[in-house]
Amino acid sequence: MTHIGGYPHEFSLSVERTGWKRHRSITDCGGPPLTKAFGVYMELNRSTLKEAADRGLISHQQAENLWGFLAERGTDTPSFRFTHVLYYLGGLIAIGAMSLFMTLGWERFGGWGLFFIAIAYAAAGLWLTEFFLNRLRLLIPAGITAAFVVVLTPLAVYGIQAALGWWAEGRVYREYHTHIDWRWMFMEFSTLACGAAMLWRYRFPFLVMPVAVTLWYMSMDLTPFLFGEADSTWELRKFVSLWFGLLIALLAFWADIRTRHDKDYAFWLYLFGVFAFWGGLSMMRSDSELSKFVYLCINLLMIVAGAVLSRRVFAVFGGLGAAGYLGHLAHEVFKDSMMFPFVLTIIGLGVIYLGVLWQRHEEAVSVRLRGLLPTPIRELVERRH
Image 1 (tube, rainbow, N blue to C red):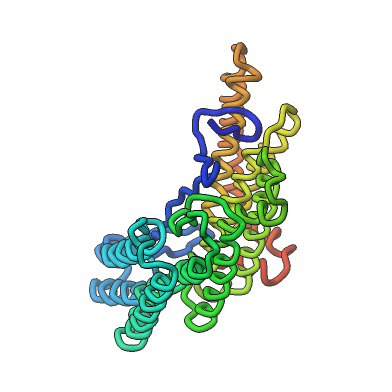
Image 2 (cartoon, rainbow, N blue to C red):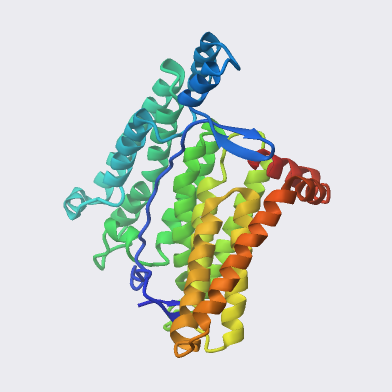
């Protein structure tokens, strides 16, 4: 059982990888096109255009032409359409085969064997990237195969290290994804360098995924690299994870501002940065109710940040933290109280009423608040909303 903000709760985080196992779900989904009206995003689909045509707002031919234009424009935008699902499913299977699902049998190839296999796979991945990009004009498959090349970097570096005798005590490559070891840092720095080079060459947002995962790995391997075995209680690891995750989230915010008129390069950085930050924060132990209340406030600020930036990852983890704090109040502080459920209900209804007030005055308040922001941040917020 994990302590969320210093108190036990029913849901848990797996803590292995010599204690902290790296569980993750890597998905990228979207939906039908969205349009903005009166400050609100609305789903736009074919049936909506047909209904508008039936009411005489536009002709049926205009509706078909407009839908064709939107469908063609969204071809290279990741979404939850069947074609894109097949793209990402196949790509993640290939990426997983050379990373998460690497079997012990591959160790028989030896260090140099693994290195040359990784180089051969990377050459094939580069050829496919160029083929998809320049011949077929398919940006999503090109981005996936480019990310595949970056994912092969740790295997190539591990092969060189194994050939030079770095892993003589029996450490195998598959443990790179399950165990913390400062020696993985060389593989991680190499992966970051390769990811930066590939991003400079191809500019695919999906290339940020292996970079973000590597930064998350680095947040765990950094503590033994800096402090050795001194952190037997994991306190330093939690602290490093918190601050390293915050730095990744700030890097994501910077990337968000720099690419506010371009594709979404910040998604994966936000995801793993917030996860590292929130995970380190939530596993810190404290017997102080004031510290737990501060934890609640941080999670509420994350929800607000998620709403402002239109980044669900902040709202999801902030919501989990807030729910954990309420669970602590219900099961620990007010476990024998008859009034706590009533008070909590009143607070919930009050929040709903705040939502009603916000909806009534959203446009006026939003315009006034955005006027106080620096131009780059204001443009980012307006684009996201």
